[in-house]
Image (cartoon, rainbow, N blue to C red; front, side, top):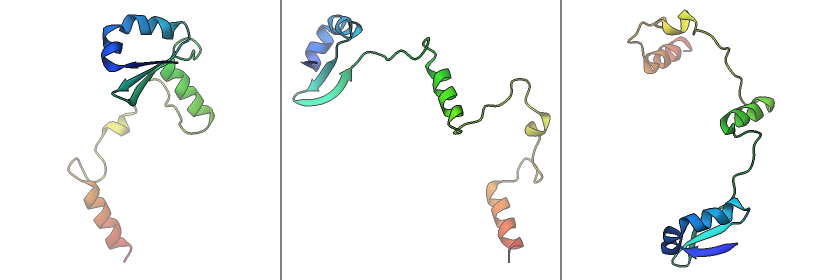
Length: 99
């Protein structure tokens, strides 16, 4: 791993990026404190980072994707309290009912 100061990284960024493209790593220091690492991007099956992440989360059961197509009209209509009903109104109504 190469270790460089910020000024050197700014002055020779292309050189350090070439080093990283070849599989190397570069640690950038602000005075003597490490602030960043330049590392190669891991191949994730075609560069579809977001898609791959969503697929992984879906397999784990963390997310469930919606179906493609137009949004159901019911979701676009105002709820039972009308367009001005807020969360606070719903909470207060729920508390009154539970007494």
